[in-house]
Image (cartoon, rainbow, N blue to C red; front, side, top):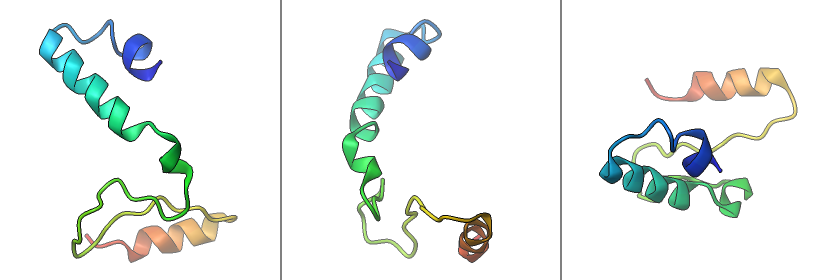
Length: 68
């Protein structure tokens, strides 16, 4: 739905639409709900993990611990 309906009418180039559908297919999956899921699977200095905290203060601490 995100790729076909939400943005599909606004992407006018066929090649751009194909790229957008590819990213949607890669990133909008059930795996994004698993704990410690990372979009980037490479071994880098910092890999962003989608946080899941019960309170606002923990999110702020997480954000403040991220590199510039």
